[in-house]
Image (cartoon, rainbow, N blue to C red):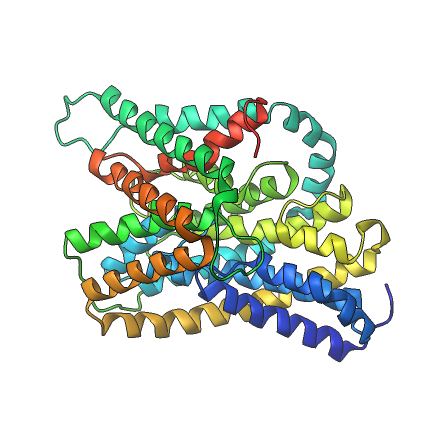
Length: 434
């Protein structure tokens, strides 16, 4: 690794952290957008004496900080990304209970805890996955199909009558899974129809899909039921140390899967996490928020390790890093430096998340929630128009309708992740390409 002045390294980490805070807080702005811009301007940056290592640090710091901050708009505004879509549901429920601050702090704790766990698991998981990931890749279609069947098979619905058939709810779950999956297939195969008015990198069909399925549908229900946001109170976590630890470990292990296994997205890892975290019982929603936060941060950490060991990028940020400097040119000292950057950025991001989350919750309770929900819904629609065009609006509207099916049919919204799972299952069986 070339010798670089310490102040350049610190400045790069701080710039990346600041960018991660911005991308995390603004719905529709993703880490990949920043990574693409940095790669585009990297020749000019290199000409002005900016080291490739500094560019890599900015991209990595951006990716790590983003995983801390992106829970704030997901929980408070209902504007999720693939990684946080399922966390919107328990997080928003806590917000309506006056515990939005606790939800944000749980997410920050999950992300911070996963950094510690991931650092301890780097060596054993690197050795393990290096040897078994080709085998897992061969059977990935069957693995994902099993996950989908377990999701549907464990659905028992919100039954009022104890004699009511569980089979009916399993059928409803399968219906939601298939409808959302068919929408996903349709959207991915026709994503070229997107005509954004404002182009920030490559337009993503996931934005209208997930904003409609998990964000707008929730806002519509809040409007119809005339939900109000109570005063947000700071309380101690109603979650035992055992469940916090289990949530962090579960999320970290699921996040490591994303970094190593081809085709497995953070959204799939959150589905696995939902299956591992018990649905019922006090604290299940809180433990799930901790776990999902751990998924995203662990994925960012293991992504850089997987890129170094097997030289295969598993995210847009890792693709960008690979294009700046090939992994075969990296040294052990560079990996140690990058891990130090991850720790430092995680500490800053943890406190930034709590600071901004506390103030966002205070601002939120001063507003009329019905008007705020309508305004957010309108803003989501405008962003879909600007970033994806008319086709994105159509997908957004259909996803919104399907997203309202789960609460209406009294089944878990996890089944709506068929929007990603079904296309992936068909892809691994060679029946679908995009």
